[in-house]
Image 1: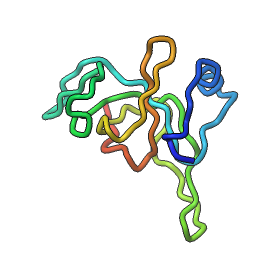
Image 2: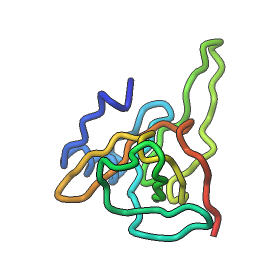
Image 3: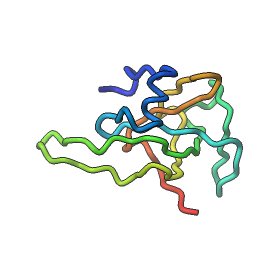
Length: 117
């Protein structure tokens, strides 16, 4: 399944956040954070089309799949967990708005860093 095929409705979001529905493979649901400065990165919380590929986004992982199977048939578990603060490029994720709130959907290999407090 591609993240581009993922349709996040209010009902699906509620099921995912309650744990009644699990995400497939290494797909993750991220809640973006508001404006912050992080080292040399400027991390915006509002989204626009300008600099879509180069702007860095910081968010909290709210749901994640268990991992994926490689082409060789080997299970690859995810090393990111719910609650982790992550950094990724805005263009590396799909943006969906549910009840006036933006959610990000992406795969684990699109994450640039896990931020430890």
